[in-house]
Image (cartoon, rainbow, N blue to C red):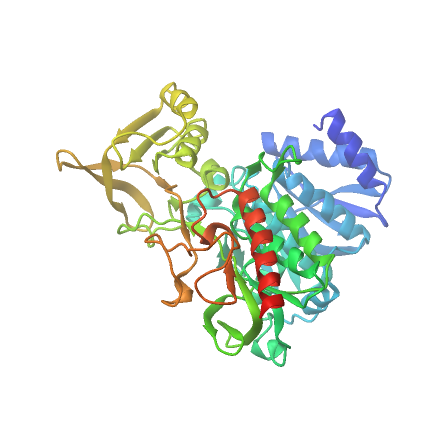
Length: 508
């Protein structure tokens, strides 16, 4: 079941088991059951601490991960390989008694949750965002006996997925009702349950020398460079890591041959925590105003103050802005082909966008779905020629250029797309089951108001020191007018802004 390299790595982890683990298995005669049974038996053969028992569980095939004579509530429905293999290993270690690597404050929050919480997460094994959700909910199940979690592989339980109209992963249900979708950390889940910090937790904070707003590569870099100067530094972030959390492969960080977004974000967070930086995660900035000090008001009403502020709020996926896009988000309208592509296996889909990201998505999807229709607004595709050549070599792809998307249609979920030929004005409707929107990014600068000089695209204009037109306010990363939007450039601009802020403090 497992190749030699994986088994060698796994053996090292299994040596860390602190107590016995019981895998209770519910299997049938189907192929997935046989694969799952093979996996659990292989695990059992590799450690005397792992025992396998047969059981009757809610879903077949599935298995639970328990302590002897104690159910933890952790269940894997399907075969947790691919990106979820790590989730399985972590579950084994934590159920055995190894403490999860989360802050004590978070552990206390989870343990104090009252009531019954039955979580179900629907995932695909190719989804790079899903393990974060699975592992967070598993940790909560280990820590609190009132919480249970079942990971469900959508490919193994297609009928269940279709009956619940799940068209994006990860999708989480709580006590049988929709709870959330997309990547969620344990902090974000707790916040949704009403256990997050309120404004009172931010009261009476002393002004910062440098307050960084935004926790992506630019923000992390800015905070580290500021803290290294020995000055009081804070960072407030809606989601630490920002857009990088949703990036699959990263192969252009010089010095790091290859990594993945979530792994890279984890290393950023670890680096930030090496310094005395006040990290305020899961907080969204709502207003910035320059008075004697610079004030940043959060959505929860709290007001933070800084002698200087660095805005590094990044960018988000650009919406195409047509009827049906919002209505059918996660109901056939999607933005991540790696995550959601497997849910459209054998179906017809469209990709809006002819740049590199759009064409890469179309190529990936063509290997999974029945047919891909690419819609590009301009007369020619903008993607690199090598990608175009690959695209045109595929038999199940149609490329439409010089067309404008008019509407994403559907009833309870997407059933088609309507476009207009920009040359002839002719309107055409194509029946399909999914639409992937990949038309670039839009800067997160709406909250800043009119005081800042911006480009027509909403990007903050900065000088060579990262300074904006508002004294004491600097900006860095994808929210600025930098010529190129790349992780490594954002990190460099964060360092520039921090050094610029330090220079400002010295001179003012």
